[in-house]
Image 1 (cartoon, rainbow, N blue to C red):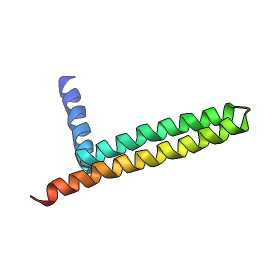
Image 2 (tube, rainbow, N blue to C red):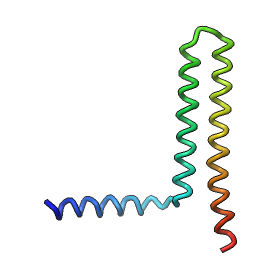
Image 3 (cartoon, rainbow, N blue to C red):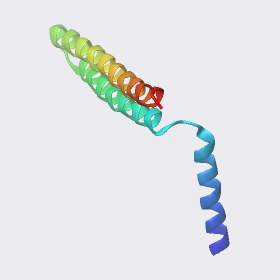
Image 4 (cartoon, helix red, strand yellow):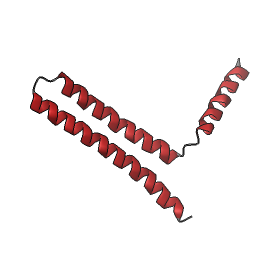
Length: 87
């Protein structure tokens, strides 16, 4: 049983290594996912409101949140590239 568990762990680590994403790329993706989830929550709230002004406001906020997430993710990736370019 112990050998089977170690084999499963090794297979999992190999699968992770095969991804090829750097820690910064993973962090950028996670940041973007968080912002995307927030935007989706705002859009869902917009769908559930009966007030058109509030709906438009929530949809605009969702777009702004999504854009900010993309900017933050890009900044993380660019910062990593800038830090490694001088090496």
